[in-house]
Length: 69
Image (cartoon, rainbow, N blue to C red; front, side):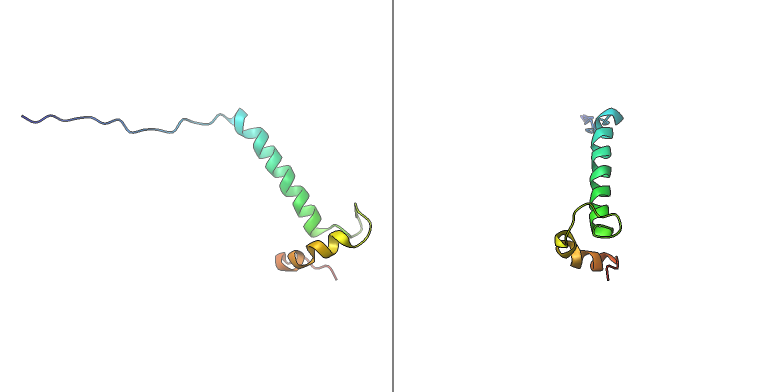
């Protein structure tokens, strides 16, 4: 006598867009702020005076290909 057992495959519940949208907007805003500081802080549109931010991000700028000299 052979019995066939049917096993249900677990499926992932879909995540609603309403729950993802605020986190995606926050991640985009954070990425834009980081891009600003790495690419153009201490330039013509400097937010902070002095060279502290520039020196802190100096090697990262060159690593990412942003000229600063």
